[in-house]
Image (cartoon, rainbow, N blue to C red; front, side, top):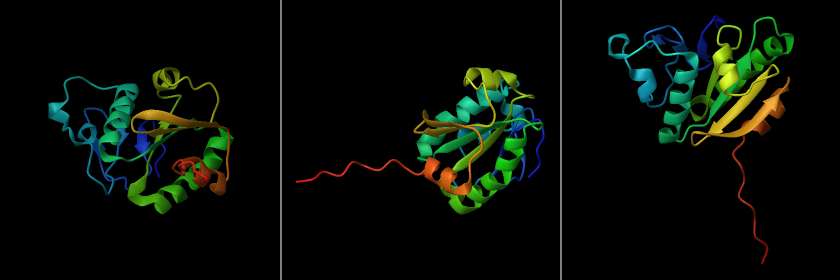
Length: 156
C-alpha cells in the first residue's frame, strides 16, 4: 500500500485514473464510469471531493458498498487501522470498495463529509451514508461495521 497525497483504493492498485492522480483503483468487479474515464476525456481536473462523490454515486449501480477511511499520515490510530483495512479488503474481495482520503492533502473532502476527528470511517450503501465510525477499531469491530443490515425477523 502506497500512502500518498491521493484518494486510494485498498484493493488491487494497478493504475491511476483521471486527469490527476487523485483516484487509483482497478477492482475485480465492473469498473464504474468514474474510474473508466481516460485522461483526455476528463472535462476538468477533478477534485478528491468530486471524484469521491462520483465513485460513491456510481457504486450503487453495482450494489457495492463503499467504505471511506479519512486519515492523515501523522495520525497514530490511522496508521494502526491501515493494516486492518488491508486485511478487510482481502477478506471482502469484490464485495466492498475501500477508499482512503488523506485529509491533509484533501481538506475539501473532509469538510464536505463533516469529518472533524481521525480516523473517521464512513460506510456508503446504495450511494448514501449508512454508518459512521470515529476512532480506532479492531478487525472484529470493522467486520461488524461493514456487515449488511439484517432484516427484522417476525414472530408469529
